[in-house]
Every structure is written in structure tokens, then in C-alpha cells.
Image (cartoon, rainbow, N blue to C red; front, side, top):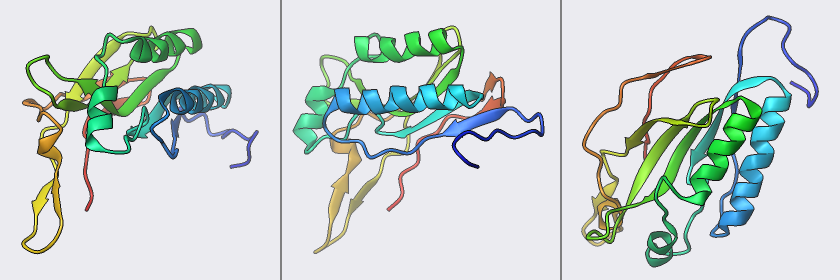
Length: 169
């Protein structure tokens, strides 16, 4: 589809966005907001952003230090944009700060409705852990708190949306 073309089928549109996140949160959020605005201008009712849309830390320590709670101004700015534009957001993998007694973060999939309210949060349950003898050791559980529940699908203007975060090796 060209930049200014929309479907004439009457179908409800969704936008699935890709981006290259860096450790610069403000840069990443600016890109997200541009993508959301562009998607809305093309008629999208729900905008899907990828895992790590907020940032990709340069190392574990940086990732942990940059995590913020769902009540942060970072998340609230996205909620306000959803309300302003009247669009739903599927925020694929938000680095959610864990409780003060745990130095890890949560990898959280957040759904925001067109009123700017968080309507569902899925915290990744199955973490990517691999420790190969004489090979790589990648332990997501070293930095991430596993979730403890599956979230039911969320009714949206484009149908029910299931929440998940999947790791690929």
C-alpha cells in the first residue's frame, strides 16, 4: 500500500509498527509517537508496537536502571496520546520496574484503550534461559521477573487481542 492509500474494502485497519530501538528513550518515544500519529492518519484503530519499543539497554545494568513503573510519565504520555487520537495501543514489551526488594524488571505487554486507560497487562511468564556447556549463557531470568498469569484476550475495535511476549533464539 502506498503512503496515502487506504483500503476501500471497509475493513477496520490495524498498524503493526517496526523500529530500531536504542538506549535513548526520548528518541524511541519520539519515533513511537510519530508512528502512532501516522497510523491514525491512515485510519488505524489499533497500533501495535514491538517488544522493547521503549529502549534497548547497552547492558543489563543500564536496562535495569532505566525501567519505570506503569504509572510513570513515560507510560502516561502514551496513554494521553491514545486518548487524544482515539486509538488503541498494543505496547509489545515495556520495561516495567519491579518491586523495590527485587532488582529485576518485568517484560510487560500493555494494552491501552482509546480513552487512554490501561486495560490489560501481561507480564512475560516463560523467560528465555539457555546455558550451553562451552557455549552461550543467556539467562533472561537474571534480569527479568517472570509473570504468574495468562491474561484473557482483550476486546478491541479490531477483535479480541491476546497478549504474549515471545522470545526467539
